Image (cartoon, rainbow, N blue to C red; front, side):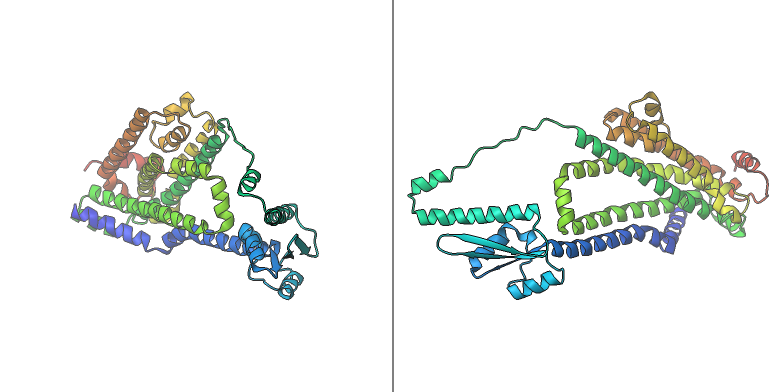
Length: 407
């Protein structure tokens, strides 16, 4: 067991220290950081150009307007001269001059462009409310009369249940999950196949197999690659959460997420939990097939070709899911949700669409886990016969010879 762990650790450390792994893990976060940075810079620049300044000799009146319209006002501009300069430099949309005497509240807007309808409404509402307060103060009404004037009309909403948002969440979850499985499979199929194929025909393998069983060596290799996959998934989850928290500090994104909170929650729920386990197990079983394919190549130079069988199989599973996206309860979809190599695509799709019971999920999961165990055990038994073949024969001859190998 110690030798298996040594092989696993050596494989794991070699992979996670490689530049290819570091770039693979960091590239999505770099792209996200660039996108958020550009979005923040653009939003800040454009928001300043859409804001107005508020100028007033009465600080209380100016403070009330800014408090009610904080996102639309650039509060740092406090004088008419500074406001004119900012408007001239296209850093502000315009500036509003507020004034009030004992009987009337006034507002004058200065700009080179006409005021937008939304901002016009906000200014009119503020002026109307301020004028009403001034009128009430001047009227010197009794407390009872003031209370009567403060009565507001009643308004209620009765919303019928709409499944449109739920359906959109299912569609988004399906495509994100399927693409995530596919891209991870493509990546690690190539990595694993080349990891195994690069050792093909080397004298080192004969020395290694003389000191430990080929099955233990194979299991160690697979465990090491599993650790790399798990590391990447954990980094993506933790990093994704961190970027989500950062994004929530940006007003535009925060408002977008708040407006679609139910949709966001449904997508996150569909992406995590049992579906994530199916993704991980799916990557594992394809990784084992990739290792098997890597051991079947004629020589180390053929390593780039080694991943093709696993990639083609994952492509078939990927494209087969598309016709059943909106019909996941079809018979073919049900059957394939129990078949290893396909269940990692089809069962999550059925779970997202609420077409799979707890018992069905458990059976599919059990079949997948047992298949992984049996496949690992069997390939481990014939691994020495596969990896030590160096003759440049046809693929099928090497396969038959490897499968017939007995230790």
